[in-house]
Length: 246
Image (tube, rainbow, N blue to C red):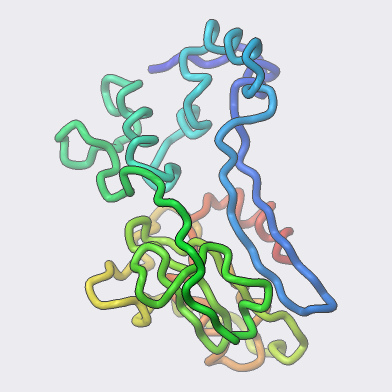
């Protein structure tokens, strides 16, 4: 077990925050959403505060998930996961699935530098650009362009990197949720096909909202492909994320 800060104030100081950013325009009718995990808070960037926190909480420099439960999806690299794994002698977060002493081995060892732009598209869902310079031939930055939206997918992480979709009344109608979550056959051969069961215990959170694609059942169904889904806690998906979508 690891030490917990004794007061809410100390907890607030010690824990970095996850910030979710979304950019939207009404006049251009295009919305692009990205997720940015902020590795450290403003206060922890101050040397004096960091020193004080380290003196009282040995886990102050670890990700905030250590105060609850960490999963491999909380980390960008295997090295980040290994740091948490090495901090707890009994692997209380279950990051070493095969008991070989290495945490989250499917994650990339390090972050790759962003590739230069080599692929250009007239897809309307990329009117604001291609945030990761994704291409149709890069497995861990794989560009999927659909009639309904565009996204980039990472085979190593098993989740999308970003999604972009055109927003206008032309996409809206009276169609209800199809709720037909399923793997996306648009992924390249050999890529693991994430299934709805892979997110057991978590909500299946849309990136391109079902509510933005209601013109007909086929269009709405495309938003339930697992490449457009990100695992989220129920509290986040049904609270702040829902408010953000609406």
